[in-house]
Image (cartoon, rainbow, N blue to C red):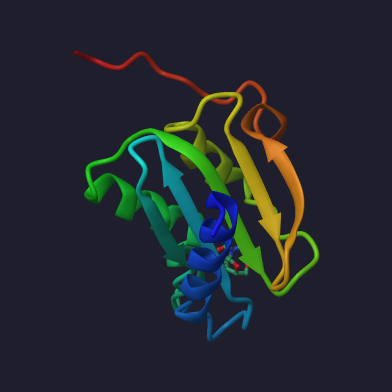
Length: 131
Ligand code: THU
């Protein structure tokens, strides 16, 4: 299985676990880390709508918990033509991804579009880290 197919299949399985009773819009995400791990996330909604978490945010939390902080590639999947990460998620991904990192957008069958991180979030907010 190619690395991209592995990312696709992982995100697709994660999407099946999505908790989206309010929107009925299930989303899966998978991150390949520079350390070679594949980490999944799904959206988790809440009756208090703003408390819901996007699939990308869930995957990032799991990635950090797994001890990884460098993203190599991301794939987002939904039963939609173009489920592009929201603005907040772009900033969340940017924290751990350089300009050249690829973000693939897939429907349930295949990748439909691929962006670089620089395409998705030019001029993202950055802050000097304290040592
Ligand atoms: N959602 C994601 O999880 N990721 C995206 O990239 C776009 C939107 C979720 C949030 C909410 O649970 C549902 O999709 C509808 O907006």
